[in-house]
Amino acid sequence: MTESLLTDSAHVNGIDLAYVDKGSGDPVVLLHGFPDSHYLWRHQIDPLVEAGFRVIAPDLRGFGGSSKPQEVEAYDMRTIVNDVVALTQHLGIQRAHIVGHDWGAAIAWMYAFLMPRRVDHLAVFSVGHPGVFSTPSIEQRKASWYMLFYQFPGVSEQLLRRNGWRLFKEIMGTEGDYQRYPRELAKPGALTAALNWYRANRSPEAELRVERNFPPVLAPTLGVWSTGDQALLEEGMTGSVKFVKGPWRYERVEDASHWIPLDQPEIVTKLLLGFLGTEQAATVPTRRRRL
Image (cartoon, rainbow, N blue to C red):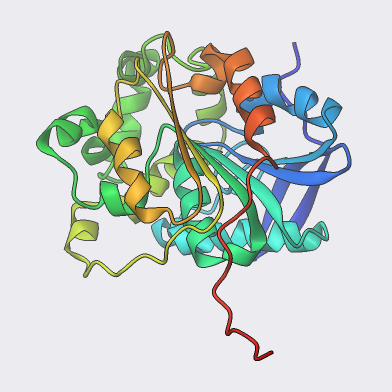
């Protein structure tokens, strides 16, 4: 069975990004998280294309067929957002529906509030707005304990790989593409690249940064969380509403782990098809013209 749907690659923002580009019509950009690739969206790509959308699903930096820089600073969130901007510009896309899961959702949120004119609709799975996650509850800290474990360069890699990836397999359980992840992460530079997402953005020092005011999200926004998520609490998604100025819709999915697109593919596809293009965005403030 093939585990790649990639159609092309582009050199953008100083790295090579592999991606899927299928269909025509209004563009939809699908952003995966850890430790996935574009392949996370395999059940959604063709239905979206058949519904008349152009689907772009990149392997974000550090994953899949894309470049895997080994420096921690290469994985700063703004750098990765700029990857997505550069790729859409390369593909001639001015404005798109942005869909993200896990780290891809974090990138999608940031893309939406930093560049509102480039976002049509926003759909985020599992991960809420960074403004909520910047002050996590003790329950959320317990659930995301692994983020602290991933902070130790070299040590984390050795412990995760040891004894046939035993610890990594215990952390993952039987969720997501759990059988495929060790094969992908065993490729040269892949494990360090993947862990660097956490080191660059979720280190203890990151919490000491002065919190800035987030621009409001103007796009119609769909937030989706699943009751079987072991890593993220519902409060992260439901609390995101206060950062959204556009129309907000929340969906709670039953019988799904953190990997909603894989566990409930039909529901995810139905939610996306029923949401994208259906609501008007909040208008970007402009000065009123005199009559």
